[in-house]
Length: 299
Length: 305
Image (tube, rainbow over all chains, first blue to last red; front, side, top):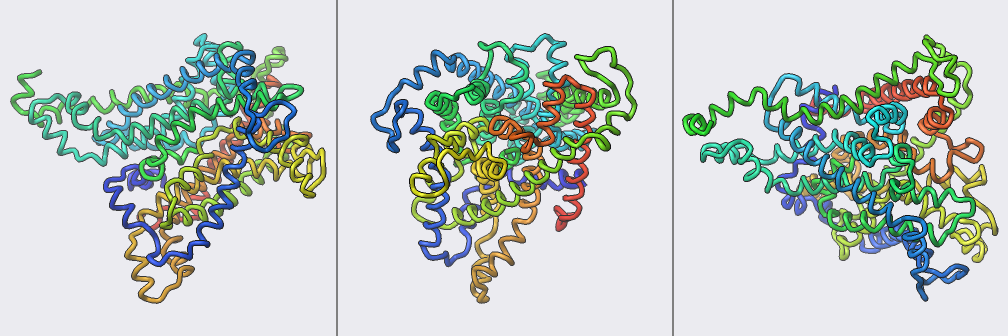
């Protein structure tokens, strides 16, 4: 059944979205829409539910200690100063960035190569590889902690950021491969063949023809890998015990678990954790609904 | 090489391509073998062992005793499994319903649609720990939302939703809902946009109202997307521990301990790797069984097969 699912490309069409623009214009739903208030009222309520928590965090981050004001004015930078310098969020931020960027590069390159093979070749073991990719979705990272810990201890990578980069990449790979192969399949093979006839090697044709057309897919996969590794917490918590190696989520968890929680510092830490993903999200959110949705499957 | 290429460009490449795909999938395959397949095999191996770093004198082959202990002599296993199931069912049902409503809503044409989509989807990018951070600030009994609600006459002062056994479940559900709904909304919206508008026009001409259009055009079209997204999300919700680990720590009194959380505690705090591995194996089998069952029952991809 799984094989059929893969072969029919049930997972893939969401990823391969040729003619997105046309699809968007066609798909506006019922021609006679509901009255305006039936849109704006529920939407407004849901926006409230979405945005008030963000606002609450911002409020606590800039509000001086002891204030009960519900507007973020007068604002103070004291909490940020405290978490960034005293609570080492400066270091955590740097570590998280390193992990995020390394995961992004590693995931994208490895998935690109695997995805190209899946999209352009029929070979023995192709279906087995696809099934392995899908099945790995059911392997819980949290339950793999103990054996992974033992492996990294063997490789002497405990307390090295590489342990986190490798784990994040591995769990990010399956979906990235499927997603990119969908995108590559959307690019006509004839374009590549034309380049070969002109004397390009396969590699040069790939860089000259496929890669430029693949930009939306690369952005999707890359930013998805970044956001995931930026957010992920367990691997960093378990594999990095030295304070100066830890990442932002681990730092937040330390603040949360403190005996008397410093709410101002916690909120400021939260804002620092949110800023990079918010920027990435703003950048990719238009792709999210079209090409990215297959990636979002992972959560 | 260059000369050969000049002779029969396309033909030549075809011939050389026999080994190429294996080279291309090698990095991904090797990484997955080393860091997914090998750990899984070692979990299977340890599940049949007594392996406890703090009690090395007892280490050795254990046969099925770890599994017997799980099913006959471990109330905490049943308790955490029960909680996991309740957590997943409630979360998925609510996330799907609200996510679907939201997707239908932002699929309409209206002023400010682009911005509302961006805002409504934004918690999707937020991590479990950050969600905990935000909702701890909201739930804080002395300065959180509850205090301001108490000011307004709703609820009582000093009440902590997260340490009260009656409210902790729904408090955690609400926090996870906040972060989880956008996933469904995004995915279903993507699928909604692939429904040809002519279908609705034809239905309108035939006099079908909006409700009938929803049940006869929209939902049948979304079926596969709904099945797939609920399944993947359910597996994800079952496995994910970030939020509950940081928000409640499994408490109060083990009340919100999910199965993966229990496994992590057994293996990492209790150092009982053998037993934790057996629990992992059981959790994995349960997941796989229900996933296959769900795909069968829902006749996923039925139209195509």
